[in-house]
Length: 170
Image: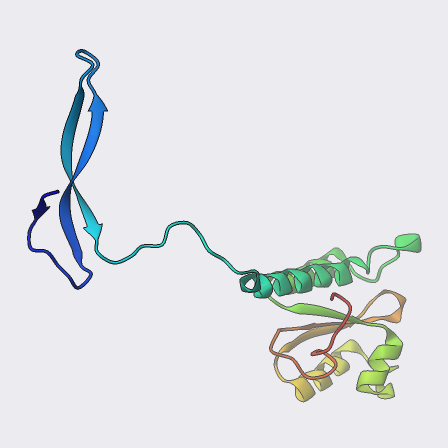
């Protein structure tokens, strides 16, 4: 093969004449053409390589999104299908999940065990204010749901207990 230009040993591109073959349809004899193609002196990987551990973050994100949607959906399912959520409130909670928030669902006994019995008669607004003071601005919303459960919307940076070891969607 004939090399055009200086030969570069440091891995830069150089042009070579690469033979291409085709068969003539009229005569049936083989005709060889030369074309310029840039080639690299460095090694190139072909194909795709992956490791299953690369998908851990995507898997975790899918799990908490599905879990959050299930927590919201649980407010509309069951016997009688009576809900305190209006369509506007339901859309707001779905937008929390779509914007990256996680929706945690606590049964009332679990909520009082983790956060104290003083919240039995408290409003969700007062509870949200207290949770924001304790856990920071990562807490976005708090409400009471069906069967006296509590829903808390928080971003992923809220990792203190009980949010860090939340077990419902794992």
